[in-house]
Image (cartoon, rainbow, N blue to C red; front, side, top):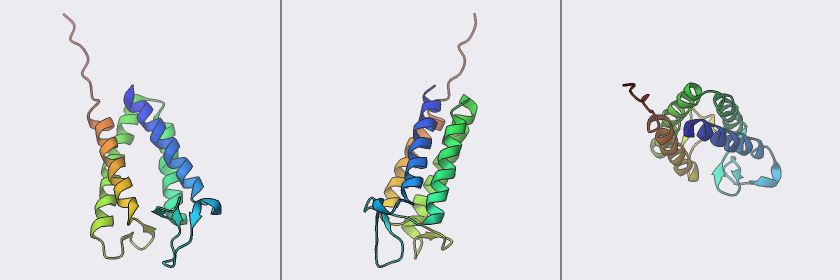
Length: 130
């Protein structure tokens, strides 16, 4: 049950942040070309669309426990890779398309950890029948 609500909450947060990335009021321009969402997170159109699509998947996954668990597990892997890429890549972008540096690294790491807990830590076995 908790995994379903995790996918719902993460889905809503990612969808909202993706939409906010297109609202100029929430963006702070930088000299590097990628504006900062809420003055913290480097973003661009590809990054925003990625968050919106991942958020929609979370909302869809909310419907069934199996889908929510898969969503959480895949989120753990993908966001962990994004966090590591942000730490080691010279330009800290995903193939030059999506910025993943600065505070994005910590946010992606936090999402990966929370997703791993929700996806792998909540697997319950049915009670044995005597």
